[in-house]
Amino acid sequence: MTNRLNKIFIYSLIFNACMLNAQQKGTSEIKIGYGVLSSNEIGKVFSDIITAPFSYAEPKATDEKHSGALFIGYNYAIKDNWTIGTDLVYERYTASVKDQNHIIASQKNDIYTLAVNSTYSYISKPKFRMYSGVGLGYTFSNEKLSPNQSDVQSMSSKNSSFNFQVIGAGVRIGGKLAGFAELGFGYKGIINLGISYQL
Image (cartoon, rainbow, N blue to C red; front, side):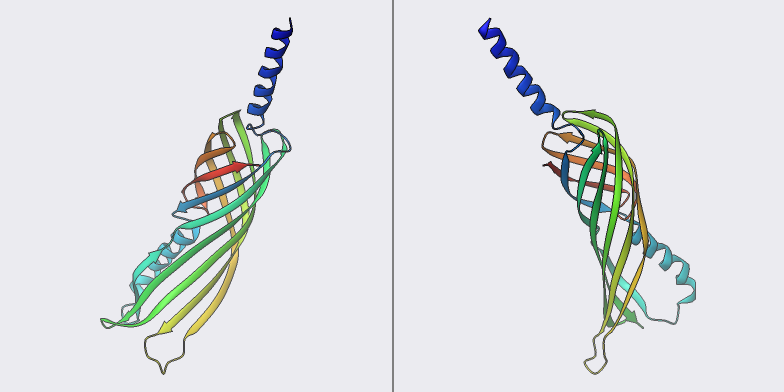
């Protein structure tokens, strides 16, 4: 009888420990990830396409590079399977500015997005979760143009705008430490991958 009670007690401890890895009310997690084709990156591409026919005689950006979207986030489960949280996203765009086949300046744009989000897990198992969600944020950019000539002053500008993220489908696989992948559109990209740790 004692052995049986001990087994039941041990099994219940294991079960409860596993259930804590599901998205239960009161649990929270930290996420770190990387996304590609963010709304900021796609917006820059479309802007270049639209202005290209009108910029034959103007200096043009070449050797354009985009860092992708690096982000860190925190989520808290206000109810079983339903979280609210925050995201901080960083991106960098760099380019060389060319005029008549001569590079005359370098361009750098640091982009930050601070957002709030909410997700709902429609499948929530101890080590597997599928979810969708939305996020709304504000994007700040600091653009700097640095001419190659020392006698010409550099120029800078700051811009800001609202931004968003739609998570069409997301999966989290693992226990307290897990990997995740998301498909959607917005400030974290069309595809993003990362790791999360449940506190």
